[in-house]
Amino acid sequence: MSTCSSPYCNAGWGELLSSLSPYGYANFGIAFGLGFSVVGAAWGIWLTGSSLVGAAVKAPRIRSKNLISVIFCEATAIYGVIMAIILANKIKKPSDGITSELPEDWDFPSFYYAGYGMFSAGLSVGLTNIASGVSVGIAGSSCAIADAQDSSLFVKILIVEIFASALGIFGIIVGIIESNAANFPIASMSQE
Amino acid sequence: MTDALCPSYAVSLGYLGVVAAATLSNFGAAWGTWKSGVSVLNTGIRHPTSVMKNIIPIVMAGVIGIYGLIVAVILAESIPTPSKNGDNAYSIYTAMSHLCAGLCCGASGLAAGGCIGIVGDYGVRA
Image 1 (cartoon, one colour):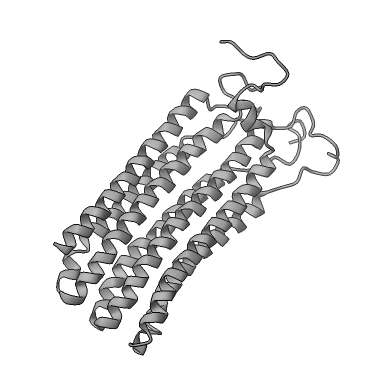
Image 2 (tube, helix red, strand yellow; image 1 turned 30 degrees about the vertical axis):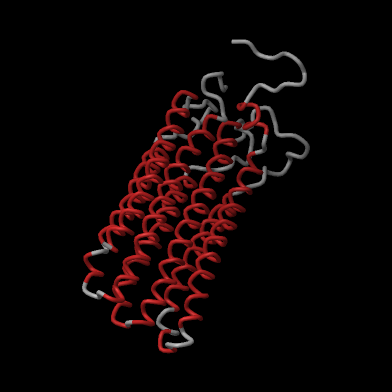
């Protein structure tokens, strides 16, 4: 195995992945989890809302029933908020007395474990909520148009939206399982 | 503490496999749901009795999301926390296999979901 010994090259992906601080990974997980969930919810709401508002011009009776589609989209944003709150409460500062550098016997393996775990929890919730939000939005927009034509279709159409919003639930299940094991150490190992 | 075969960054690769399994197969499930859902609803205007029959592609697409969930949970449960005295129990070998297992499930879920969507779209209209 030939490794580059010049001061200008790094040791590969391993050095890159472990050079970013686990606190940074965890906070990026929160940001991606909440941000992407809101992107998915917003995308779904504008897809369904524009069709709903347009179809309601000729068929005003659909207005209140079809707000359920908007509520399904909003639920994906709420999953993101739940995950962000769970993760934000898990980020802990080192205990008092550690000022400039982490001590030698800091529990680095679980430190890194916690950072990566929270990053992937946030990412899985955020990206699945984009998928779920867009899916509910497109289904909801067709729902509004079909309901305007024939109001007996509405209940059957809701089945499509329920399947679409289940995808967001899958994401938060995975996120909660991943973040359960992620605990930041707060004191060096000799003190714990 | 951490030797070269069980580095700390192995956990990031393993968890990326979990993310890939969960998110990519959910993207496929969403694609299948909306593509076939739109055509089900549009044909339901003219043929209302066909709606319940044509829900089948949407159910199948939802099942693809469940496959991704199952694989993601299995992978996430098999990534061990570091032991109390600071040793990593997770090797880079296992991490790479988890990463690629997740990508395998996710990419095939994406393709399967898209396929269900397109086939369901044309099948419903037929």
